[in-house]
Amino acid sequence: NIFKTLRENFGIDVTCILLDGGPLVDEYKEVGPTHVAYGSLDAFEQITTQLNNKGEYHHAICNTTVTGLCTEKLTDQNIKVISLIHELPTLIKENELEEHAETIAKNADKVIFAANFVKESFEGLVGDLGNKAIVKPQGIYQELTSNKNASKVLRQKLSLNKNAKIVINSGYADLRKGFDLFVQTAKECVNRDTDFHFLWLGNVEPSLQNWILKDIVGTEFEKHLHIIPFTNEISLYLE
Image 1 (tube, rainbow, N blue to C red):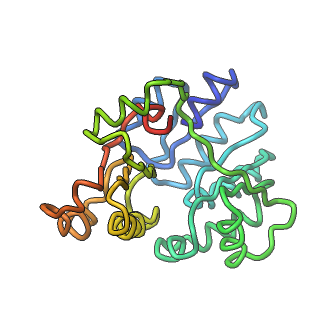
Image 2: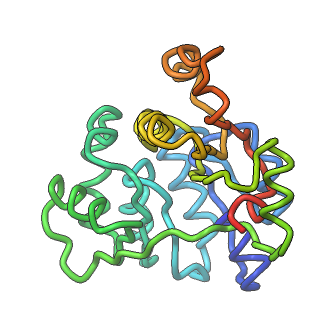
């Protein structure tokens, strides 16, 4: 969606390089020029060298710590790098991305975090980033549209009464996103007030389907926890 937004909303001539293939490659190609490195850093370097043989590329956005080793290849070609960091230290260590993080700290011109906690955690691994670090809360890439009847429509859709107190979170439901804490909080709130209904917008990580959701099937609490698979109707829920 970064790729699509830059091209379609801002009219920027952007080329996308994917570190590996996947089911969305064709969708990327529909947006604009797309290249795939198939998991090879050497292939990534070869692609960037060929693309930049006339020195026409000046800036690169590297998304997530996984792209860390790419930052060195880009700076070697005098391309300024902005790194977007989402991961906390536990995930970085679990996936053995410490070298990637250190490479970002050394080579990126700016490192952007969605929250100060993420910034401080990352700096706990790589050291103080100084004025390289920028904290910018994430927004919503989908275009939101106003609907004055959204509250009524949503309650009808979920068979809720007008007194229902609705709490919403969105994203891929895994432990990193705090889905377990979301469910735990929902239970506490519903125990105190049965008008509470908790909605999670997004698919649930398979292991949590068995670990968390399976335990509430058939219980009274199940009526108060609503899992909405990935949807483009985000406005309806947030209105």
